[in-house]
Amino acid sequence: MSNSTGPRMSPGQRALNDLWEEHIRHELVTRDTEATLDTMAPDAYVNHVPVMTGGVGREALREFHSRHVIPQMPPNTEAGASQRILSADRRRGNGTEGDGPSRPSNELIRRAKGR
Image (cartoon, rainbow, N blue to C red):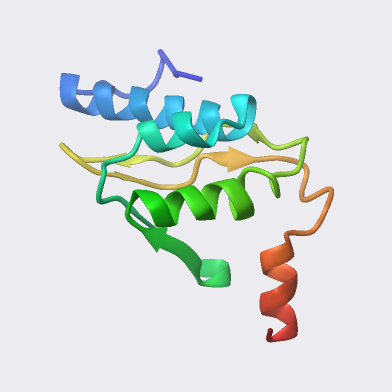
């Protein structure tokens, strides 16, 4: 997943980028919740704005990833090149793409129906 022809990164940015790629690999390829969580800080939070879901802390993120992210991920989803903004300790941007959902997300359906 690394782009060796991309812009130069500091060692800290490279480490953060490599950790992000490991995170995406566990979400999309191995689909392993615990391995995904191991790439996150203990006090991490996810704010999935399009459907206002997510969680704060390991237990909430375990629930979120194991019930709403990984099993709902369409099988054709893959990691791809995306815009990434790296600072010394943060990564911004998205890192997944595919041909569009091959099955709808349960959470997205509930939110759309107002439940």
